[in-house]
Image 1 (cartoon, rainbow, N blue to C red):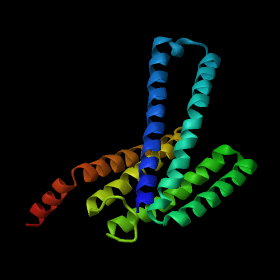
Image 2 (image 1 turned 120 degrees about the vertical axis):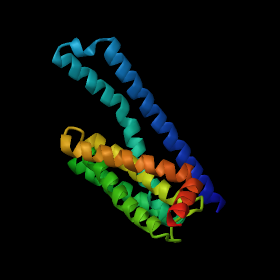
Image 3 (image 1 turned 45 degrees about the vertical axis):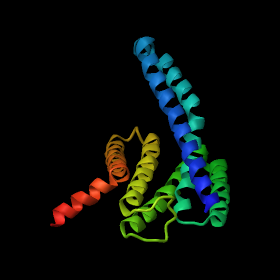
Amino acid sequence: MKKKGSLDFYLVLATVAVLFVISTICIYGMFYFKLAQIQQLAPAEKLAYMNRMNSVIAPFIIALILLLGICVPKRLLPAAWLNRFAVVLALIAGGVSLWFGVKTGLVLVLAASLVLQLVVLALAVGGSQLLYFEKSGYWVRLGSSLIHLGMILFVLDLFFYQHQSLHLILFWITTGAVVLGMIFCFYSQSVVLLIRSIRR
């Protein structure tokens, strides 16, 4: 159990660090875009700026996707099987990346994470005891599952932002999942009391 707890801690720490870097780059990019008046430059120069920022943030997006590829199955698999799953997923993603490009390989990892997270969410809704969570409590587990689902959909949205309809759907599902997840995690006792008062 100690090893499992330390794995959870390091995964959370790494995820928070990567998200912090991504947020910092995005905020810097927005302010620089405004202050340097990039919008007034020629289309070619604006495109060069966007490509440069994409190149800077790309490694951290890849790191976040790989972290999600580990975080999600650890709810379903014991540590020994988690290592095997991570190796198999990395080999498959690497092979797909070589044949069809890195973007396709990353989308594959996200798709696998999304399917597994939907399974985790379904089991969490059903109150299954087969899931590996560091903390107990129905609403905390459900909230954690929703937050992870929102993170996966957020990163997936980055790949499909040019498809306006799909982008809006993913954005609102992401927002709803993360907000509900945080409410269930941080205010689980209040949620329990609210449900009990409604049932009365």
